[in-house]
Every structure is written in C-alpha cells, then in structure tokens.
Length: 465
Image 1 (spheres, rainbow, N blue to C red):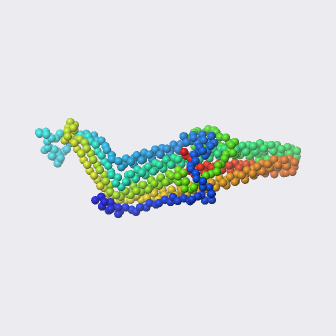
Image 2 (image 1 turned 90 degrees about the vertical axis):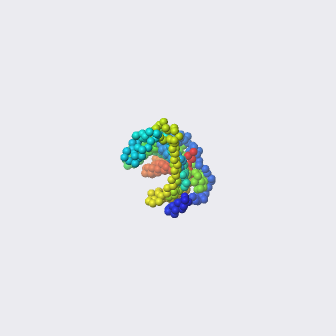
Image 3 (image 1 turned 135 degrees about the horizontal axis):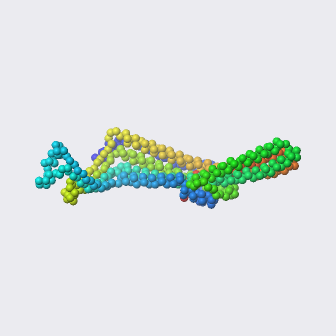
C-alpha cells in the first residue's frame, strides 16, 4: 500500500531542477611560471614586524566583527540541535485535574443518571477527572526529510566557521595594510619636513641675492610660495596619520591611542618571493571558497528535504497512564489507560505551498552554484592580479629610486650653479619641486608594494591559524 502511494504521488512531483557546479580550474596561473606548491602561511610567519604582530593579536581578541561572527557560529550550532530533535521521538509527561457537569436533559446526562459506579452509588455530580500519564509522538523520517535538514544545518554551521576564518584573514590583512600605510605616511612627512628645511636655506640665499640687487622680488615670492605650499602638505599628512591610526585602533577594538611602529625600517621591509602554488590549491586554502562550497552542499540538501514533502508522511502516537474520577482510585489497575495510533498522510489537493517551497529551494541551489563558481573565478583572478602587481611595482620602485637619487643630486648641482651665476633661479625651483615629487612617489610605490604583499596573503587563502 505504501509503495502504491509513493508511486502515485511520485508522478506529481516537479522535475529536479538542480544544477551541477563546475569545479574545474586552470592548471596554472596565466602569464606566470611560478607553480611552486605552497600551503597556507601562518600570519605570524608572513608578518614578522613585532609591533604589527602585537596589533594583530589585540584585534583577534577584541575586534567586534570577529566576535559577531563567533555568535553567528553559536546560532548555527544551535540550529543543528533543533533539526536533530525534529526526527527523534518526543515524549511528554501529563498531569491534569478537572471537573465536568453534564446537562441532565442530554444523551450523556441521561446515561449518567441511569448508571452507577457501585451498588446504590451514582456518578458524582459534577464529575471530577484526574489524569497522570506519558505521551509520545514520532514522525518516521522515511524519506530522510528531517535528516537532510539536519545535515544542511551542519553544513551551514561549518560554513559559518569558514566565514570566521575568512573574517580573521580580512582583519589581519586590513591591519597590516593600514600599518604599512602609516609607516609610509611617516616617511612622507619626514621627506616634507626635510624639504622645508632645504627650501628655507635656499630662500635665505635668494633673499641675499635680492638684497644685493642680483635678483628681483619675483624670485623671492616664487620661492616663498613654494615653501608655503610644502609647509601646507604636512598638515594634510598629519590628518591622514590621525585617520589611519584611528582605523587601526577601531580594527583592534580599542579607543584611539598612539600606534607604536618603527617607520625607519620602511624602505628595508623585504618582499619575499611569492609562492602562488597551483590554482587547484585555492579550493583547500581559501576560506571563502570552502564557505561557498559548504553553503552549496546545504542548498542541495534543502532541495532533497523540500522534495520529500511531496511523499506521504508516517507518524506514530502512543500514550499510557492512569485516569479516574477519584484520586484514591488512580492506583487501581482498572484505572490504567493506553493508546497507540499511526497516521499516514499525503498531500492530495492544493499543493501550492509545498510546490513553492520546492521551487524556492531549487532556485536557491542554482544561485549557490553561481556564487560558488563566481568565488572560484574571483580567487583565481585575485591571485593573478596581485602577483603581477608585485612584479611590476618592484620594477617601478627600482626605476623611481634611480630617478629620485638623480633629482636629489640635481638639487645640489642646481644650487651651486645658481650661486656661481651659471643657472637661473627657475631651474633651482623646478629641480626642488621635481625632487620632492619623485621622493613622495617613491614612498607611494613602496606603500603599494607592501599593500600588494598583504593582498597576496589574502588571495592565497590567508594564514588565519
């Protein structure tokens, strides 16, 4: 009979609309010959600056975003318990007391009036009722609907754990990036201050030349304007330093305070050769890919669970206990009651609700496939972009360093030529400006290099351990 019902209802179930994900990855990275096998690097090994390590440790303990994610994990863990309880038998204990007065001129009233509970002893009026017993119900999970629901909850719990790992990788990267930016701004400010002193010295020379009638007030004004412009730069940099420090403090979950760093080591910070590994390793290394994969598994299980709603459900109910109209009779064997029943229920008409549930689950599964494939593609491109960025920025840094050295030497040369009347003051002015710009650009390139290093750490999966 059950098989017949399954066959009849199975004919009315919508077709499975599940989509299979594409996990295929290229064998290597385009335009890259580096295929060294690598494993996730622990952040303590990747970022070795002691001041930065202290900041990251503080953030991993205090950051509100990570703590919020930890509570999401607890919620998902509790969801597993809730789903597990759905396919286990439920047992409840019942104790009740009451009284009932039946109208005399009714069928029950007339029957009670003519019945006795003992010889010459009629039913009490009103009729008390005392019950003590246990009751159990159990829906048999024949089609694994509830077990699949529990497995889906487990997959989402594991996905939330991977979400935590991804959050840790993000926070570590954000602090490292802001820390390097702060060091860069310190060096930027140092360059500006040194240029201010240099420009003041040259301005004195220009003023002397003007006093000796060798130059006009125009030359003095132009050098004064350049000095004021350079002095104005330091205020903007100071504001940027304040904002970056506060961003680091926010990520560390603490109120604003000075951020300890050794900015003198900025230029000497090493960029080790990047070991990208193979694209297929990203499947195991990147938390966001593992999270997307687990969410996809949960979506597949949801489809199976929703599909089971079309099949008949089988449930059992049972109860046993004691019932009488007098408390002293509860222990009498004749007061024992019990029942056992089974239900087989299947949807017949108006199945729009379960159809909608099934279609939504199918659409969510297809959506999860696209998100998974999108995450794979993004991870591959992320690695490629940042590895190429490091290689190109290294070359750019070397070139800009040579340019900055040449222009720095040119300041001394142009100044000496000016003093010997062999160069115009405009050449000195232009050389100073170009030297300052090249040094600032050199700092910015170094900042971009260090930021690319952080991005490679995140792109390869991040050592959240």
